[in-house]
Length: 531
Image 1 (tube, rainbow, N blue to C red):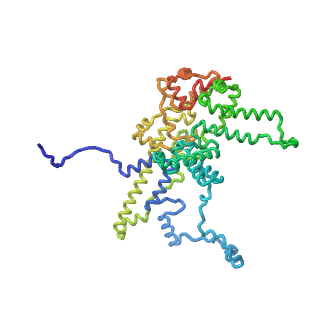
Image 2 (image 1 turned 30 degrees about the horizontal axis):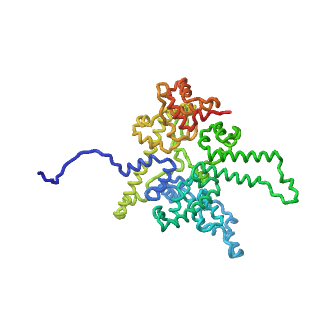
Image 3 (image 1 turned 45 degrees about the vertical axis):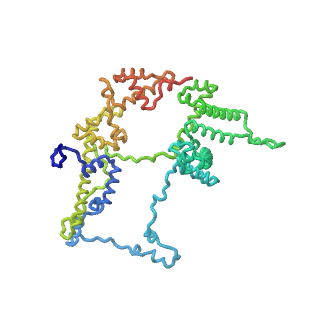
């Protein structure tokens, strides 16, 4: 039996290794202009070798030339005539006659002031809005804490997903298994009752509908809140015996009829939401009226009222902040030709520090310091090369886009041509992933507006005659046909496919249905408008 013995062997293999410089190049390429500026600012803070070129500040060479000219007497100082009146320091002149607490404006300016940004208001979140309302109520400590706990478990739409038992267990800090034991049963029951009261309290807060478990409960809470407010506004005042009714508070019979009609609409809406929500989602008003045992006109009025409700009451406080978009490139026409230019406004122009260069060549610099400076120089040079490579890749990619999409620049989206990332990558001689990073999260200023670079890349439709029609244009054609249809006799997916085939675009019924669903357009049955 052969024994295992250690021995040396050679093996040749290839593998891809991402060096730190290559990793930085990949990350820099994927940045848009605003992100690149943030990265450069951070690198300038971390790396002292990097300096920003300020056009208003003279370089060291310019300073040396200017000093040399002054020494030779070439440049004479020109001093403007002095105004004796301007030489008086009025702040000091009157200082002894002022109150002891008075300070001149320059003395105030020397003190560090808080940033103006500290005084800017932050957008109110749903949790903040609900917590403010809870703080204005007179509640016992336990109920207030339970209500805050419920508010903390609401999702961004204002819904409460966790079950009551889960909330009670989490609120008391005990597991559900432990809560089921005899020792914790009483404590769990008390916590569960407290959670029920807290949820009911949250249901009465603004905006109406928060704390609901599902859409039905959310809409029901909103309808109940509006009914309560309606009754409060239009309730008839109680009359004391032997006292004449105030003529100014009495309403005419016509006004009373309108009030009763409005209340009837809200009551029917509550009935539909509670018992016929599935029919409401089908948008069949006749079936809805038949199921609710009301007239079609009443059903229409109730549906219109339900449309005014908010299915996501928490969204108004949890909206994302507006994202700032700044174009990375400009597509402009000069001399009859389309050209691409980078938007480098506000981007720092980098250079290597002359001071640290002298430290590298100086014999007085310590070895450890020189090694540190040398490493910082390598990092700075790598960053500057990667920024230049990013600019070159984006420009070459955009030049191909402009060359292929010239008709779009002049005529609009109907002239957009299908274009693949792979095709552009082959034309400029890079990998498709490089082009994908070059266009990611970047925008171009075009005659058709500020557009994301990915907007220009889309596949064509299937079929010999539809191969030159990009996906975006196909969806617009489907939408246009549906917008122009007869509302009483909407087009089916088969009819839409046939009409597109008459235009030379070969699409199947299933593909048309997919495009329609992608654009959130209802089906033929749901689009049909009935009298």
